[in-house]
Image (cartoon, rainbow, N blue to C red; front, side, top):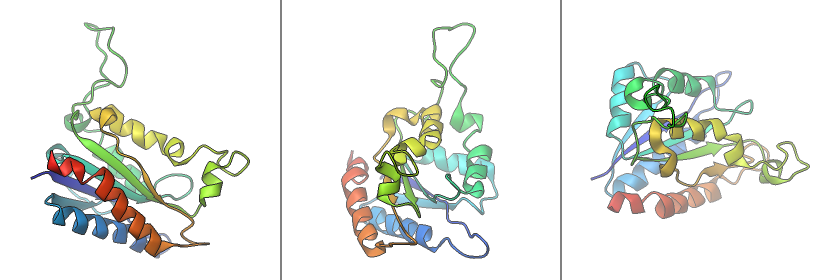
Length: 198
């Protein structure tokens, strides 16, 4: 049985929010549990035990980070989790370099090789805003904008374990939530479920 850790980035902002991220996490937990995974969920805004969180990461075969995008990045409570938990030496390792082995490259010391991870995010931005060169994000696309998060996982040793990113877009001005849920289920079935079988 494979272990899946869902890092739930649901947060409230001015007393509101978090329900969409929670819904995606609930959907993932239900689907992946039915496929035979042992699923654990951490609400990133409310964890209290750093060592326990490190054990969850070490035990996980697949890590799914689900978060809203606020102010061009993930909420500070999500970043706090990254800063306090995902930089612990037991899950982060070192930068890979040493005086004894100067040929080793920066960022090559992560201990979590063999695991997989996936980012799933919700945005107020539209697809056009993310992908068109003359729009706000200069056509960079979601993965380029999420590059620091991908690099954190790579630093931890999961660079070869990146699964395709999922995005729910335009969630305020033009929400298509039921369609997004359908796409998310299909995405998990295509990109995550096969790794529960090997």
